[in-house]
Length: 501
Ligand code: ARG
Image (cartoon, rainbow, N blue to C red; front, top):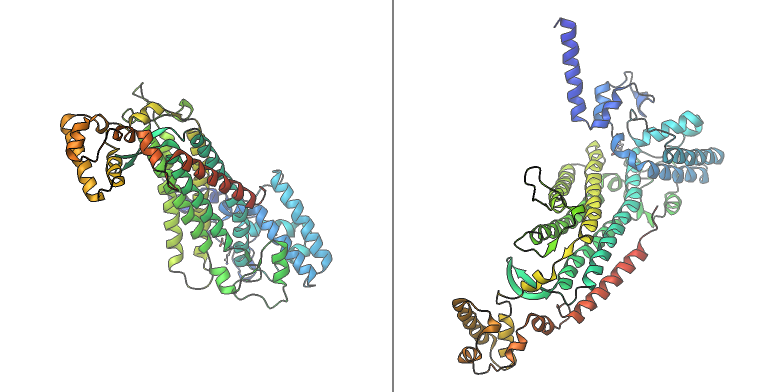
């Protein structure tokens, strides 16, 4: 290698190291930028190509293009209304932004990945087309309040889209449950057979967790109903902006109270990613159960072939990979949450560029959770339920021992004494290899004369389930009440969500 090719090689290596550190799409930013950075006026030198590649966020924030345009239209309209810029120019800006939005949507305008971010790209296009009018759009605004606005507008449409998927999953689960209010199944604690329940009761348990997930997402959004526009870079603006009217136009309930807090706040990213992490915990636990239930040992379910995979070496295998992948991707969403918490923990007021990294984690958590909910829904909808195996799980484990004790309590025996009688009966059954319901009456009576021949009808799994007739219990009528409450939740949440955009 001669000296010059040596140097080229080293330069090339350095450049690719920078590109590796920067996200992959950023490589395109090494090509000559079509627009100078918005801040170039202060500088005599242009930025190093590697520096641009490292700092750009357009590959991540371009998904908020429509939101950025929406925000800029409202801002420009407000500038026109207040006379800060000529009304005619405000109108021209609004019209051109609308055109740009349409062109982006139809794929006629390609996002230039050499731009520093989506804000710079849109402003650049606007200025190319309108000249001075385009140069007025950023009056009284900073990218610091602009990004806070874009994120809110994006989340306001993205989160309801995820909630709609969650409601779809809830509908699938409640539909399955409503067919299985009498399907007996052992309930477990410590993964040991505990007391009989029904498949419907069991599925409803997962449903309630998902209702809370949806509630947490609504809750996180509810704290972001105020508009950040007008917070500026950190200290508002000396121009007479009408924050309230821009907020009204964008459908906010008011304006944020403190400009420093507004540009420094990323609580909403953390709250939403925390809500998504808990949602993933639920899906992951459910998936663990699916993996268990699909085993030969449990055999409670059979996964459809459409939602199973095979083995490259063991021809007989049918594996629950989708459940395993969802369980695995849970770790990734937790990672996004930890990344966000760590990102924010040392930041002084107000905006710091570190905060640009929020979107990578937030969007990754969102995309991962959304795809997991969708896949889980299809996977669970295609399951066949082996109700015989489930019913068989209710016998043989002495899961009715509590019911024997309850029988004695109803006859006046103190519970602790009744527990002892039932335990002694279980001991007898274990020693003799029989089930509690097959124990000779005289053996039972030897332990308590309060036990009569009617005990046996009380010890069937169906009787054990029927006896648990309290709100929230597995009695089929009670589970039908749960299902009605879940359906009300689904309908009310559906009504409360904004229409899909
Ligand atoms: N892209 C930045 C972000 O996502 C917004 C731009 C603010 N940049 C700045 N140098 N103040 O947070």
